Image 1 (tube, rainbow, N blue to C red):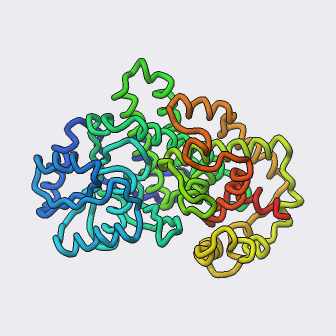
Image 2: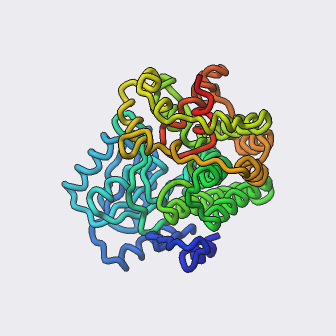
Image 3: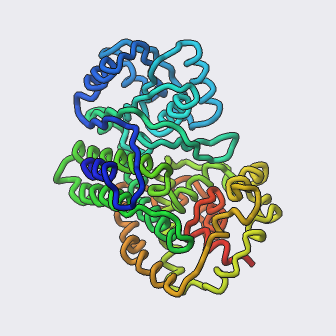
Length: 425
């Protein structure tokens, strides 16, 4: 799959020039030594490691290879403006010339944001195969309560040690599988965006993501045969590929859509007080909710008269959104109206043609497995499949509210956003 990445960079049939800032992606038991050699080659003399309370043990092992300063965030820290400010202050005081993210998703998002802000390079040292953001160029942050994606910087190199990430709790690897399988809906929604609005889509990037998903499914089905370490390595490879795809695309479109929007809504705590799920667990539950909703839409038949009549002014009415998003409503409106008017909403770009339905159905047929198969795979991985399993309301009413309002977490067009807008009373 990594060869596929190089082919896309060299000459992509889509006609766009894809750029990749990550120079090396190493998955090897000598990852720490390879990182030391890379730091020496680059001439960096003052590395600093960002870890959390759970991954500090691996940061200390890195110190056996090369001297570095270490700063530690809380074990349950999320990527917020608070932790970014603390790590930023550490950088101001210690003056490192390179940062090393030693941890999982939140540690990486904090590090990449601070690296961008301080104009520093950073290296990735993932300690669990749990999320696909290790080598991406965007930071998923909870900023003053709102879930936002900030353009940021990818790592200049990634070094992953199978002995480290395969020793992580099984729940973290299962979360990674949930994040990978979420690409079923991500890839379908990207295609739906192209069909509805003519949005740019790169077939090679879609193929690359699909290969990553297939690799994980193959490992999942043969987990007992290949062994746990090899299984975890397959998951890590797929997560790294997915992050590189985000980087090649320039945004998270190939890897994040309705399934992630549901996860983001729950993380914003607008319709729920708490939630117990890891990122990939929430994505897994969101994946299943979205897949079932799409199945129902195609089974019942999409109402194209209602879709054609979608009124972005009505959809983005503050009086409709404020009871849900409350103090975050201004941010939601800004996100969904890039130039400040409903006419700039992704919904305003919908253009129906005579073959829209046939193209959507073909995309669903070729990209989305039956929801029963998705559920089987998630259960095989040990990933939650219900809202109750991640500490959320198990009622159909909660699921319906989630499906109705999650699309507005991002301006990105998804079939879920189209369905929600078309179904307004």
